[in-house]
Length: 97
Image (cartoon, rainbow, N blue to C red; front, side, top):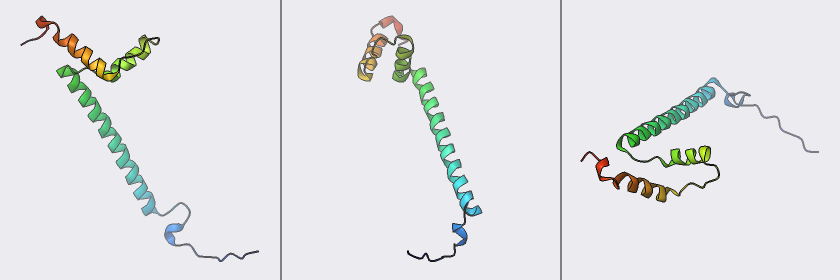
């Protein structure tokens, strides 16, 4: 049988860690939450801007197809973009300029 040497723990090795470790963990969690919030806000702002200038939203199209037309396969993104541009510019009276 092997004998184990008893090694005293350092202050930072105590179960549960030290207040400094807990503070660093809390800071990291807060940073991650702030990053996620910023990403969500940026995505929403981008989506609103796209709607204002008339860029079609492929993700909304796919969600609509899944919710309302489950038996049909949605178009690929390239075909969707092309179809939306064709629909938008094929009617000359539908533009302001």
